[in-house]
Length: 178
Image (cartoon, rainbow, N blue to C red; front, side):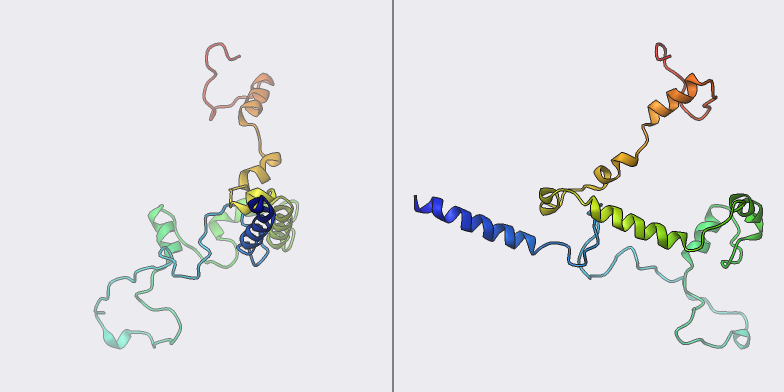
């Protein structure tokens, strides 16, 4: 009987203890894949290019303390080159893509759209951060939060096929499916 009287107190103490382990900054963490520690990021370390002796030492540029180094890597430029592209100026629109940009922006461009969408998404995720037990036991609720916005791919495919639209990138219909 004595143990039954202690149970509510133990349960309350456990809930308070687990509640203290929650997210302190208030931002919802739906994917639950990041480490909360402030330790080093092993993927953030980029090894430098090997040192090489220049042909003319007098032609070397002046050192820029805190600036770029000749052995520093540029992951974006290396990725573009590996995929066969050419990295143009990084400010503004690359001249090779100006036609695409002009077509995409033909109805206007909303200034600050990225910040607006980020704020709206944060508010949506805060409102849909899962139930108490899901947050308490650190269950991934990302897909459940965005489920109302997801598209049923097969239903959409068949809607367009029934309407007579060609769907060349979709798999062909199986026998008996139409």
